[in-house]
Each structure stands twice: as structure tokens, then as C-alpha cells.
Image 1 (cartoon, rainbow, N blue to C red):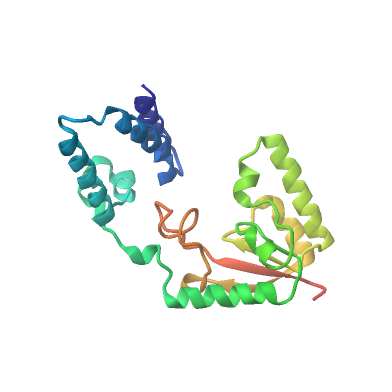
Image 2: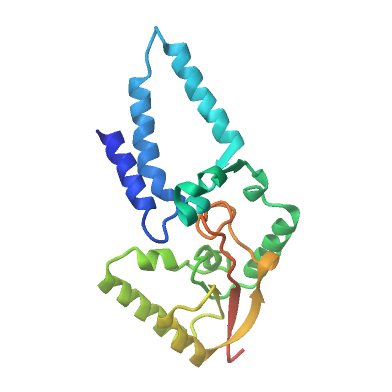
Length: 221
């Protein structure tokens, strides 16, 4: 029953707007536990384990792509599988160099950094870290407004030497940012420094994220 409920939750979750592949987690986790329970011991065990092994090999070689189904429904089923591309999750040399250069810059001179979508950048720059965009959206609305107001107030005070935003600046931050900060660098296309897994990565997005990374610098500097 739990496995069936997990599959249903995954199907409903993935059918919602802006859904991503992590919607499959309930179905995968509960189905895996169910599979461990129902695998036969003794008679039929070899055949069952062989079937599991075949599916694991299939998953290593073939990758599901969800966008064709989202765009065209069942008509996109024939285009929904492709050969695994390890390059999507193994950083190439150029990406490693860009990431290393940015990390060296952040670590070189301790200063307060606010990176809305990359909270760890604050830690690399010698700061304590801060709330990220996902964290702001994963709390009740009243708490969300409090956090946004706190961040906006820090921006108005000029607490940060630099601010990084991936994509468009959220509406609640536009005014404070214009008052105290000026546009700096813009990283687009291959020049961006993005994670290799998870949100905004090539491997973790149904629809590839093509936005620009913006740096804003304090006007006094």
C-alpha cells in the first residue's frame, strides 16, 4: 500500500506546474523497500535478481528525458529516452577552471557576500552563510515575508560587499538593490559557474536553465 501510495504521489507531484524529477522520490523510495520485501528467497531468487540487475544496467546506460512527455504527452514517449551522457555530471576542465577561479576570488579577501541562489559562496568568502532562495520559498508565507524584509534591510544598509543573483532579481529585492548597489559582472552561457547536480544544473532540470548570473557591487566601492 505504501509503495502504491508513493507511486501515486510521484505521479501527481510530477504532473504539477514547474515539477522536477525529484517528484519521483516517494515512488522510488517506497517501491525499493517493497521490492526488497517481495523478492523471493530460494526458488525464483536468481531470476528475480537477474531482472533487478537488468534494470540497473538499463538505468546506467539509458537516461529518461521528461520534457518530450511534458510538451506532447504520450506522443513524446518515443523521444523520452536517450543514452546516458556522463559529461553532464562530470565537470569538464574548463568548468573546473572557472569554478576554481571564482573560489579563489571568494576566499582571497574575506568580505560579506550575499548569493541568493548559492548560500555556500558566503561561507567560502569567510562569512557565516545565509538563507537561500529555496529556503525562503519553503516556509509559511508570513515567515517568508519576515525573511525577505530582513534581507532587504541588510541590502539597504549595504551589509554586503557584493551580491550575486542567478536570473532575474525577485520583486521584493529590486528596490533595495537599486538604491545601494550597481551592476557588476554578468556571467552567461559557458562563463557561468553552476552546480553539476540539483537545482539549476544541467542534470537536475527538466528544462535547462539558461539564465544569466549577475553580480552587483556596493556603490561606495
